[in-house]
Image 1 (cartoon, helix red, strand yellow):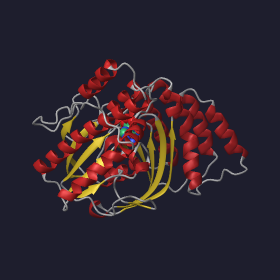
Image 2 (cartoon, rainbow, N blue to C red):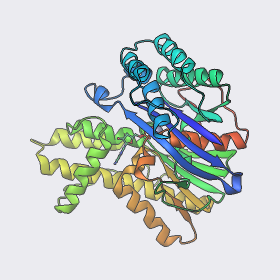
Image 3 (cartoon, rainbow, N blue to C red):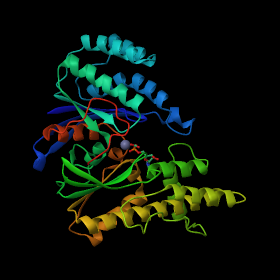
Length: 387
Ligand code: KG4
Ligand code: ZN
């Protein structure tokens, strides 16, 4: 089955094409092509993602990205084509949904249907105006080409991002054995999911306030670093370690000793703020030290809670998903869990697959498709996972 994945839940417009086959015990994925367009440069000046701007950028980007993905897979010719040049030029001027609809309709009339069997589209969670652009685009393709579409939960996409994917350097070449535990750490989510089977998932822990990625981004902002701050904090923290720079105090490790598997990061953020406000000046060394101590605090909480969840639920596999797992220090520390639990299979996505992309949406779409799992074709900003 050839699957086209489409992702527009936040500030990345992404389309991916994969081939998938097999049943639950033996799924085989291979990558055909993928394209991700990040809107960071647009949102950076506002210090975070502006939903209506994200929507407009998705509208402009969707068709060029589709053309790019199909072209990379030799499904379309763009060289020396006036029609293609004209289409790409028109996309730059798109303002409204109806503009994209018109350009896409004209494009589809002039272009042979590619060999695609299923369209997988993110319907939530995320920014609803942004989600709608992808949903409407997918619907138009599905109707015109007369191929089925399947709605995908973005967080389930992050879970699927760890699965073996041929034609890439995907990290683990093993099947996920159930029960599995998933720790999802992204810009808007921090949650622990118990997975009995692909259809049977239960949320066993979540953040009570800020998500971990949000805490990274807010801390970065306090240090005067641009959005998204996660990767910048991570770079500063690394430099601090290389130069042996450490803060003279410890930030709190919120809820580390609480009885449940929930998280909280807003207190930590406030502690960073108080610390910064109490300083006469924050030079580069101080920034590095703060970044390092912040990274160590969140990592310690994550590892502690993950170990606790392992102790309680005794899973066979661990899955880590979401943009924050691009962080090297967190990756290293999670992989260390393997040393004390050699029988556990720990699945981590490659860095490319950690942050938002549409390949993971196509993979998750296939899993939902073969398991007959259905979500509405409607943007749902708060779409939850599990029961
Ligand atoms: O999964 P994702 O791409 O988008 C959401 O679905 O939210 O995650 C984005 C989040 C942002 O908060 C970003 O700062 C964080 O992932 N992030 C990182 C790193 N790379 C991305 N956080 C810490 N260290 C990183 N290296
Ligand atoms: Zn995400």
